[in-house]
Amino acid sequence: MAARNNPDLLSALAASESSRALYLKSFNGILPQVSLSNSYTDSKSAGLGESKSWIAEGNASLDLIDFGQWASIQSASAGQRLGQANYRVAAANALLNLYKAFVSLLYAQDSITVNTVIRDTWKQNSQMVNLRYQSGRESKGNNMNTEAQALQANVALDQSSRDVRVAQQGLGQAMGKDRFETLIVTGTWSASAVPMPRPDFEALLANEPQIQAQQATVEQAQAQLNIAHSSLLPTLSLNYSKGTTGTTEFPQSPFWSFTGTVNYPLFGGGLTSTYYASQAAERALEKAQQEMRSIRNQTRSALESAWSSFAQAQDQVRVQRAFLQAAKQRQDESDVRYQSGLMTFDEWILVVQDYVNFQQSFLRAQQNLILAEAQWRFATGDQLGS
Image (cartoon, rainbow, N blue to C red; front, top):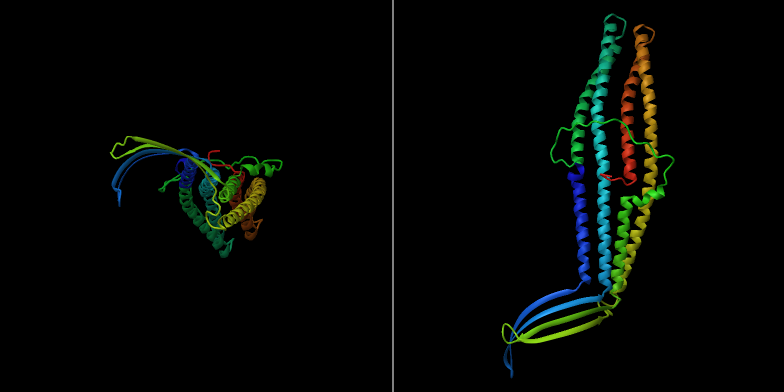
């Protein structure tokens, strides 16, 4: 659905198709040019009197050698590759945004479940402490503390419901929906395995859309340099005309002409025009090449960071699961000990708070794992639909 409706992706697709059309159009510069004309002339001069003539003519011309036209085709070809690469960049961004939006909604939905459990836990604890307070076995401050914890849990549950609507809007935007829709997602918190051993990041760089786009930019800059140099090179063109002329609207006297022209623009744009145009194009090419180096270095660092974060997120899920299981066991044991008078309120409340915190931490760890996978896929150049 995102591939069909996402406006950023559709915009990049239209730009890619436009650059392809411009590339195909550029070939017209080296193809034969044909024109037909029918003209009428009425003139008068001293001694010759008035003269009227009609000319019907067909003209065909061809540039056999024109380095500027070939360089323009080269530039248009690079522009086409740039448009295609920019579309791949947009598709990679669309996939990343879709990942984030989907995970945000799944997290918001599961937060309602987790916060409901937390709310029920604090509600039950508050009732238990209140009974102890009523019987004189617990202080008023501790009773107020558990009531405040229960209130906070209720507020967090209400916020979770609002977060769901925000996440629904985000997912709808990533899918290209123009109006809000109530969306429900289903899924499990599972991710693909982290590539092991450490991947060869240099081999992955060739498939990076950002690098492909910059490579096309370098090729465009090279083409502009060739265009600047072409003004120093001669051109060869052929022209053939055939027609009829006469004093009537349908002239009967035939004529034809054939012309071959070699042109060398010695100082066509001025004494220093070519020199400075070449200097500007060379500096633009150097700029594009240095930007290519920068993008390669940034992408290599992004790959290293994304792979490390992915592995760490996968490890953290296991760690947080172990902590949650331990916290659950400790909470069950501390409830018994607290009710039996073998544990103080201050000790018991810390155990309960740990259990609550680890429920939330485990859910965040699961979310972080999927987001880390999304960032890894983005770093390796994966695109929507791949």
